[in-house]
Amino acid sequence: MFSNPTCLIFGKDTIKRIGKEIKKRGVKNVLVLYGSGSIFKNGVYDAAVKSLKDNEVGFVQLGGIKPNPVLSKVYEGIKTAMKEKTDGILAIGGGSVIDTAKAIAAGIGYDGDVWDLFEGKAPVKTNVPIFTILTISATGSEMNNGAVITNEGENKKWSIGSPDLFPKASIIDPSVQFSLPWNQTANGAVDAITHVLELYFDKTENNMIMDEYSHAIVKTVLKSTDLLMKNPSDYDARANLALSATLALNKTNSVGRQGGDWSSHWIEHSLSAFYDVAHGAGLAIVMPAWMDYVYAECIHKWVVFAESIFGITAGTPDEKAKAGIAELRKFYKKIQQPTKLSEINVPYEDLPKIAANASMKGKIGNIKRLDQNDILNILKLAY
Image (cartoon, rainbow, N blue to C red; front, side, top):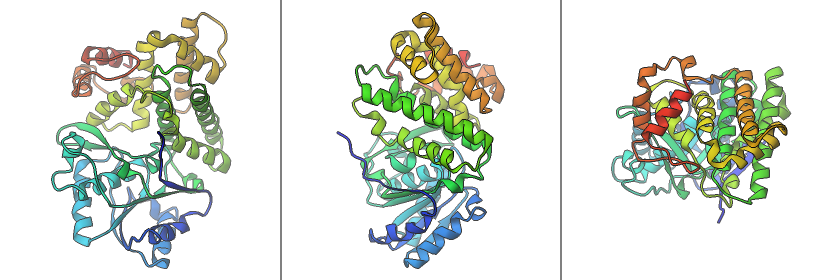
């Protein structure tokens, strides 16, 4: 079964439509969330506020949401929304802002500590509508029903999901991403590739249409990112990258599959729960190391990956698989992403702590079920 109720509005000069989208759903007062304040410099804030005012939608603001969004900000948002009696949330930013919006909406709909929902102590239910204006393409949160938040007091970076958390409408104007720092564009590219591959490597056989769909998304990300290195204002490249990041994790890519593997995400979440590392940068380090550790469990899929994505045709299956992994690392290095934990100054002696955190809920993974010792071995490979 496939369902995605989010209305995606994509293209130049589309931000002005947000007020109408909110108003027609009966929302009268929104909590506007944003991050560091870049939206005040690139015209996004002015366009959004004008649209709200033109459509007689009231709003209150909460800024300061940072990458790897934290639980304390979720608490602040819940308190503000309830005090100001908002009946909707507008997230303007990237995945961190949108995930915070989803957590706030979930918290408003729950009579207790919102972290209970991340602990699995209660189901996520809410009637608070969420709207988004995307300014960084990476996580796909603008068109899916998941959110990841860090409980900074307990070093837990965990997720929630619910049909109630799909945004009602999301706007993507790729042109507002022209001014992004390069590392944010590169982080987003890695995140999008990883989302595709988490679903791709899950032992599902004979799902040819989804495999080809995955190949197309990854190849588009590779080509678009390469073009953006040369010209960050290439609209077509920016638009192709933006839509690829959305499609990578809006559930279309999971049709007919077994849910994916997600080991790399689990391990990276534990890494960034302790260290201030961007999610995409962490994934550039972790996923190739995970591949090195598990590819033999499903070698034919890695051969198809190497052949279809990188055009590798020579060698034994083992040689092809290794060459494909090497090409992925090569691309990450090309776009100035780290590929070793040592490059981001993670102490080697901290690896057991990270492995213990990643295995807190038990074994992880699909291709190969990984226990704490397996995770530690992967972290060592990543060092």
